Length: 264
Image 1 (tube, helix red, strand yellow):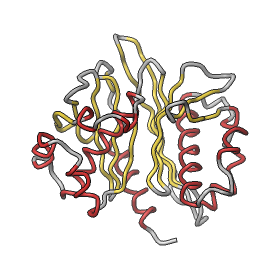
Image 2 (image 1 turned 90 degrees about the vertical axis):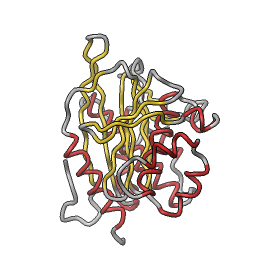
Image 3 (image 1 turned 30 degrees about the vertical axis):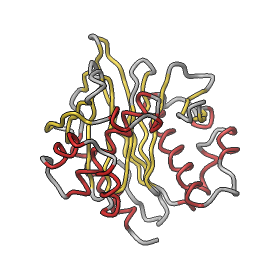
Image 4 (image 1 turned 90 degrees about the horizontal axis):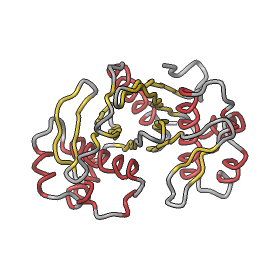
């Protein structure tokens, strides 16, 4: 893990290799958390952006939108480097697909998928084999979001939320992150009725919380909280996730949350 250096604008990065097993065959994925200020991203974007990505990130974009695009691409390139460290990140492009899902392309890679999410200057990305679809989401826990989250959740899910530990904003946002991560794994986004994405059960897990879904029994989710950031990772239920350093991962999420909260 690399945290802040003496340079005020240095990025914060934590990458977690994910050894997976499906039907006895080993697979690899790579999960990256990154936090970086806009001035650093602007100054260093030519070191990690593909020319096609440069065209997406123009000066005409609002600063918040530009920041999200840049930190998301940076996290994506670091996650992809976890699987292919030999490839120059500028040789890989993460472009929006026809459903606005991120699509990886490059002459040196095949059958790689990427899912990414950002909350302010913090981004999460997971790179994975396309045969093992995954989805990621990260959100800032906000008290003012609770009424909307409750209104958009079925009653069964609210009963589930009431049994979880933690403050209500955290409980509601954890469930929301799981649903949004599922929508990314399915590549439908939030274009379907939200009740289709409902969380059916949540159980304690070494990584945080393990969830199953009411209408998609073939997927499972992992929910994390660090500071005021909630995050979720969704993958096929048939994929076994080998032990990883989840304690360090949650500590990194909390550290990124502290950086986000710090005044500029």
